[in-house]
Length: 438
Ligand SMILES: Cc1cc2nc3c(=O)[nH]c(=O)nc-3n(C[C@H](O)[C@H](O)[C@H](O)COP(=O)(O)O)c2cc1C
Image (tube, rainbow, N blue to C red; front, side):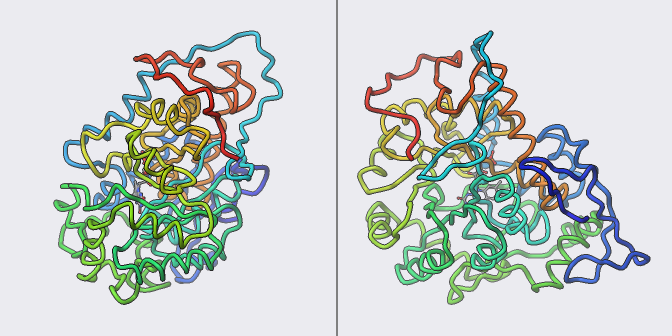
């Protein structure tokens, strides 16, 4: 069994992903005729950081730094973790937690765990057709998956390849015809929600990408060619396999008029049009998109209220994992005031800095209806393809479950700020605000 997990939800099943397929065992890497050359025992990864370390070993510097690092001096990147760590639990004891559940209901659907996979562009750098691997792993775990506009696999193929709840993240073009064409594709492919990312009017200042030559258009230089050669597992199983299966990686969802190749110059022109977007574009989208519509990148009460006023069904409280504006506040710090202002009226998603189930529980207790992870599943993808993503989700789910038991909580709806000791007092929550939007 290769890259298979089987078994019950969140159980990886396979003790070890058996991916050693050599010339004597010619069941080669699907679609490429190339052999796999490494074995990883995913069960030895006990937490997300273990998966990160495997990913770091496997990936060339250019790919690892694109995944791992943050904008400018990485103040926000570090603070996303530190802000979680400053929050402590106030556990209740002698509570019967034997019948606990980590399920949540959101937008009329019940999910197996209170977290989902955030959109990550260029995920195909981390395993072959990573967008499909992520979507399938999310489906197996019963959690939502958000496909990025900047995926290497076309949104229609991802929709066909995986069951489960799929949402589409939109990098909206100011050009209405281009935006309409992409949104229509997402609607026709059956994506249940549209997540409009608003915190990228311009690209964040990621100096490491420039140092590594990882910019759009991508230019192969001696350093990254050598780096690739020094990481043969990645070179064979990800890079060459992708090249043989579908040619030079393309952002398959980007309007073909502007060109989707990562080596194409005019892709940066497509991105440039984003800086002219404002709430009137969102209002236009609201008229046009018939299903759930969410705004990603909200960090203030003012914008949360504007999102409500413009008909959003939900918001993502997010600083893009510290990849955009350095020194931006961390979502977990502003979540209480945002939940106090709009909780119960729209669905509140939170992401940025989540590496442990305890982080997820903290965000839920502070008003999130669902928590999202960006890097964590990609570490899994780099460590072991779809099985690695499943392992990441399994780790997070079991950590959520354990923390809920240890704090004496039997259901997600019972997670409230009273479960926590906070560094600062909370804003008052209006009486009408409720937890889940169902
Ligand atoms: C490699 C990578 C690519 C990303 N690409 C996108 C993207 O295409 N669209 C988007 O809205 N957010 C993108 N994000 C941000 C994530 O959706 C999410 O907000 C962030 O990763 C959460 O922080 P975490 O990585 O600490 O969990 C990306 C993040 C990473 C790490």
